[in-house]
Image (cartoon, rainbow, N blue to C red; front, side, top):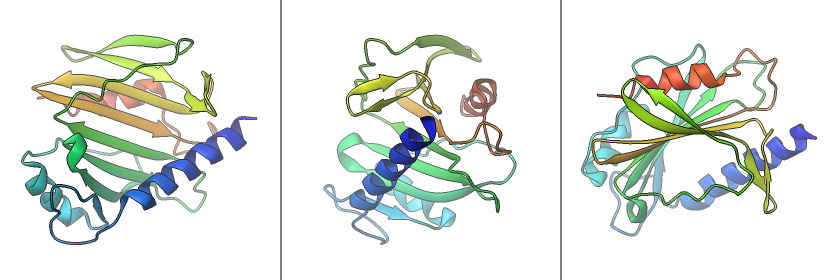
Length: 181
């Protein structure tokens, strides 16, 4: 049951990413969304956003940079990583840093847990909304926090918990701790 849900979620993320990408260029006007696929071009997204994005010092084994997006109306940058292995089963990480409050409302049955990242409290949620129904057991982990006037979201999604690319909640928290000042 979870595999079809996760595959649908991954497809939706891909479609959203593809739809949002309307330019592969050097800069964006205030109403354009673009994606670059070269990690060297993160600086272009940062230049347009007007801030430097915090990136992890180290990534989990075999996770590779995939893309970066600047979304002007959200005043945010999202960096996507994927597990680069021959047995890829859909493991991806998304890191968003933005200036505007994302105004997150969790589903009424979502289990929201407070976790401590260094000296900053974050919200951890497992699950996904599938056709308007929250699935607490879906293999998607959300970690959100605010620090230094920025709002951060770190999302892990995968399909196979037996995969070497699978991340646990604790591993996600440790990755997020690298983003603290």
